[in-house]
Length: 313
Image (spheres, rainbow, N blue to C red):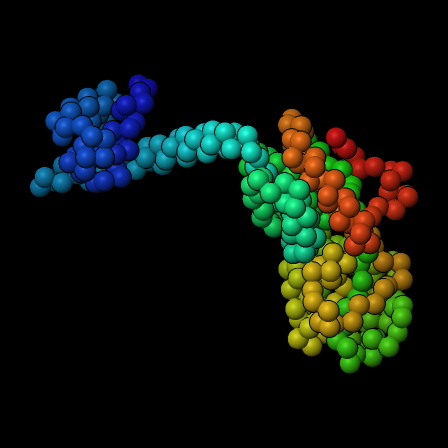
């Protein structure tokens, strides 16, 4: 049998409150009405939803399993309500943004600040996220626009290159490498390296730089992100290879930044749903972001402009 919406509502109310009286108060109906509908539901289902012991209700295993599915339905209903509110709010404007942490620490907040100078009535939500939750936010349409610095490959998402930066070496001010203007991978070998696991995107990029230089990468400290690496270098734990986006988010004087010969390039990209065109607000935000990246020295090279990202909208 299929439960109708009223039966689901009463069942959830009893599960939530733990009693017939509590459910009746929650639904603004009489206790006998709740009891009758609950009993009828159990008869139609062919199994008990509750055990009645000394006047109290205890959910059966079947009831608990059913309740998990009911809660999933109610989560969807809440999302419909939230979306309806957001659609109404878009009369004045609302924009949901997500980004990679590296570019989300300074460059995206700077862009938001400048965007709001010309769009003061627009509500903005912004979350810096790692790749998996960021991708899911875009796929679920809980975010309209993402800004990432690592590739995202998904058939339901479109990407467009918008800026680029290099991997650089950072070290403490009193470090021997601080006296050099350009470094090679071989120059880094004598010193403790703070780096990333080989199964991570950043770890793969750094490992490629070492392999191409004919060197073995030996980690002294393994971290999960360039932000962690920056903090450890600042604390004097070693040297690290990080992206320039992350370096930009740190304060002046944290450490010395030195370029590396044949360093890998990181590309910042916009990500959006393949099935939903960007709103006018999102397009306006992208224009401000482009200007911010250009101003901060992260504009695309001529080569990148001549070879736009696959799946460009």
